[in-house]
Image (cartoon, rainbow, N blue to C red; front, top):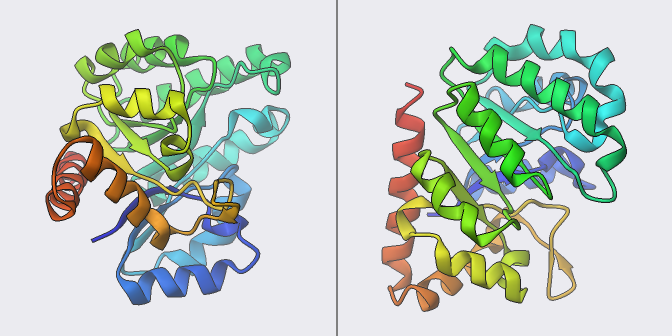
Length: 243
């Protein structure tokens, strides 16, 4: 069973075809959105899907849109149990909107802190700040998507009860492989982050996550079926918290 906890189906060239194929194969997908307006476009298409759920996002790299979109975020908040992609990005690409990002992220956390939601977290170059804010607002259910931060924070993230989602790009870099080696199997989930991730020079799709399962199998010295069962158990344990 393949589980993709972070995929931007709406940003593929052919989103309806990707959704249809995931449903046909039986892949469980959490479909990210980058803005509430994107959520509103995708919601009618995804609400009837059996294996795919849509997530309400406010992406940090689109901070210029946050003020005009935030009322829409609040308006749609009760339509889904999944929040993402949200977080902070203090990389060269995002640092100029740092203060807007922090303000928006805190508003998101304030509004979800008393609700049963699962958050998919962007934390590039802002891992410490993201973790501190999640703890401050007593967020119980969060997944650090494509974690690339300091090794010493991994145990703190785990101690807070959060998960990590692993994609093909992570297994294709030395830093990513080091990070994976530090994450216990009971805190791992899988993600494609398609269509942003490429592997072997090809755009990754949810069904390509077998490459991640195979890598974890080798690195953790488990057979692939055991890895699949661990990922499935982790996913079910996470979603059981919001039921």
